[in-house]
Image 1 (cartoon, rainbow, N blue to C red):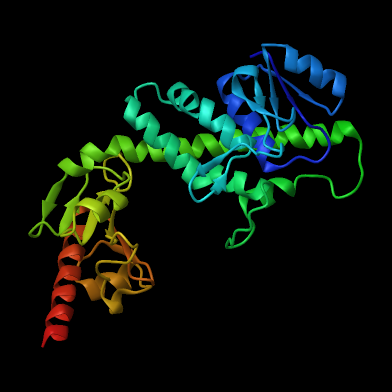
Image 2 (cartoon, rainbow, N blue to C red):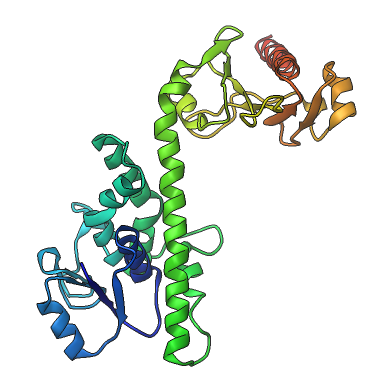
Length: 314
């Protein structure tokens, strides 16, 4: 792959994401933005050129990754014809695993496949849906809308449009890299979370570092009500207590209501430990100076939880 050709003028999340994915594999690949039929024809004939969002066909062996043809480019769910492919999804389908392996070469093949599917479910399929005209409800602007906002609002010079396009491509590379790395962190932390100590009858998970644990606990550890862990790897790190969630994202317990929103001395006086730092007003998160302090808070929280359970059962 020496050259990518895509359309010029107004850009969308679809082709910018596709270009970003390919540049994550080959940062020096040339990108040509044009609608010139002659350049497009020459690109189709060049085995070292990929055409994205133009070309009128989805023929990966020929380097064609378009979805505007009458037949489209297929669906993720063929039977229901839901979640259609656009150019971003086609490029991710063929090159996403290579990107993940390049960023995280130690992953096993099944882990690479899991991460690739996760990113498609999290981001790519929504980019495709938007570009294919599927109406989706979102809380606030969608990723596609945010990307489109970088287009000039008034007619401008081609150089300015190209500058905005490549700015967005760089931004998307950062976003995709971050999404991949965060999920890889979850994958790699699983064995450590499963092996972590469980105290208080298995209801408190004690971790040796702040690492992704919540989703694994939700799925595999129904008895765990909360986790405690140091905030950093530095000696003398502060500790946090966080409430575990159920598979449907509901808290398994809440911290005592008289802790909510308190800090430092006020919280320490209520909890009965000298090193309490804060308790979130939503009662799912608290912090303390030392392990002993956070352990005392965890025990107090469990006592409150048990008292509430007894009161409800009475």
